[in-house]
Image (cartoon, rainbow, N blue to C red; front, side, top):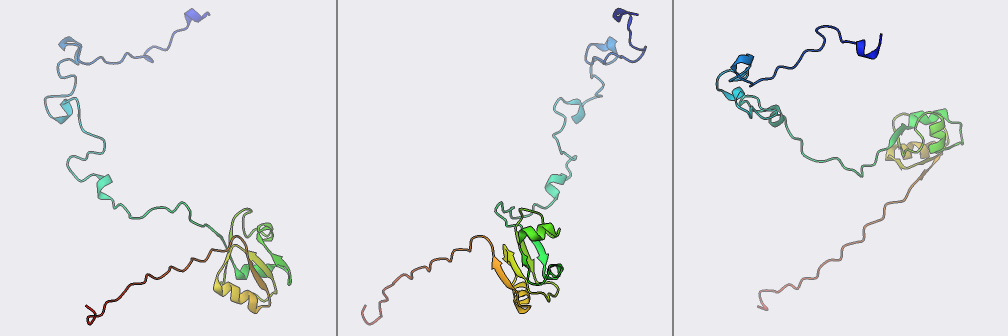
Amino acid sequence: MQLHDLKSAPGSRRRRQRIGRGTGSGRGKTSGRGQKGQNARSEGFRLGFEGGQMPLSQRIPKLPGFKNPFKKVYTIVNVSKLSRFRDGSKVDAQSLADAGLARGGEEIKILGAGRIRRKLTVEAHAISNSAREAIEKAGGSVKLLGEPRAAKAPVPEKKTESVSPEDA
């Protein structure tokens, strides 16, 4: 057998129907589209058209607002999870990652759910007031990582001259 002897199986390759090529072809004149009407026209209907019914894209509500690209995303660790560390140890991002409580390279926020009885030195990027109180009550200390927020400069008050009715 040689390459020129190869043939495809009978019936596997069928020619496409050429429409609009005269009445003798069986698909002439209206080309299988029937008489008149919207579907007989060349344009048909636009994408998403539902026959005059309000389209889905217009029916669903468009929520207001936007996604803040500068949103701070923290890995949350509760105070109750800190009891797995030894008394007097330093708890920072690296030790939390080693313990499987946070992923490396992510900012950490400590929340105050649960109890703690160990004296720990905790370093985190953010901490809730209740968590700070719980850690300090147990004899530990808290250190915030990262840059502290700059305090806003006070806005100077405008001096306005008041004119009394007697002077006018």
